[in-house]
Amino acid sequence: MSVANKFVCYKKIGMTYQNTLTWVALILLTVTGFFLAGSAIPAKGMLIILLIISSIKFLGIGFQFIELKKAHNFWKVIFVGILLIFVLIMYAVYAATLN
Image: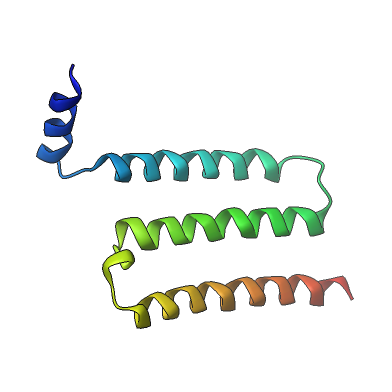
């Protein structure tokens, strides 16, 4: 199948090559998180790694599939702010359980 035919095929089902790459990256990050969760990494390191992976996935979904890249800067700031609040709350809850 030629490149032109692949492009036409993507357009018929409403997908772009960038959407496909983002989807594959999300799947790979999900599988990575699954296997890391069962590893022998210390809890604090695991939390940081999984928060980074989930943050990348959150941003990928938001900017690619929710199309925040085309939105006003206000909505981009709100979206990233919600992510930062979530990450800080998760880390604070973890830190509170250590005491």
